[in-house]
Length: 237
Image (tube, rainbow, N blue to C red; front, side):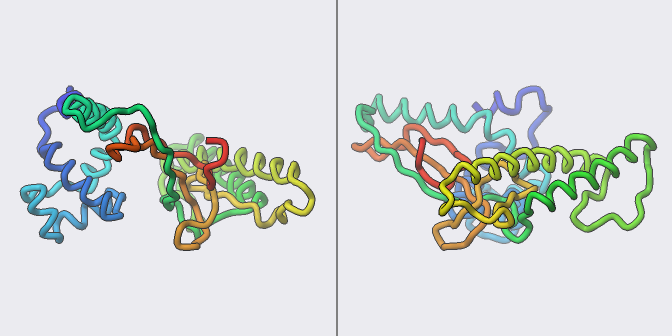
C-alpha cells in the first residue's frame, strides 16, 4: 500500500510506515497539523521512539498528509477484512455516531458579505497587475493579502468561492421564518476555508467546524465507514 502511494517518486528518504506511526499518535492526541508534527517529532521522546528517530522536513510532513489519502482507506479496508476473517466483525447492524471538530481556519478572521466582496475586488486588481507584468512590485499591500503572485492567485480562488457561499447563506437566511432570520451582519464566512460551517464546538467556542460521522459496528465497535461534512448538525445525513 505504501509502495503504491510513493511509486514513481524516487527513493523515499523517510520510511512511510514509521511516519504513519508518528502521525496516528499525533492525530489521536489532538494534533492534526503537519506543522505541529514537524515540531513535535524533534522534541517529543515518545515520537522519537515510535519513528525510530526519523526527522522529516516540514514540507515532507505536508506531502505525507497529501499522500495519506491514497492509502489510508486501503489500510482501513484491510483491517476490516482481517477482523471479519478472525470472527471479530459481523457488519449486520451499524450505529451512526457524530462529533464536531474545529476547522483549520481562524475564528478571528471571519468576514461579512460586504467585506469578502470588497477584498475579492482588491485581489482581482492586484492579480490582474501580476499577470500583465511579471515581477510587478506592489507597494503597501494589506496584511491579509498574499505576498507572492502565486499565493494571491490561490487566495483569489478561495475568495471567489467565499463570495458564492456567503451569497447562498444570505438566500437561505431569507427562506427562514421571520423570527428565525439572522441579521445579515451576523452571517459570516471563513475566507481561508470557505466551505466550512460556522458554529459552536464542544467547548462552546464559535468558529469554523466540521461534522465527522462514523458508522460503527454495534458488536465489535469497529468503525465501518467515516466521512466529514461541512454542516454543524447531524440533520439530513
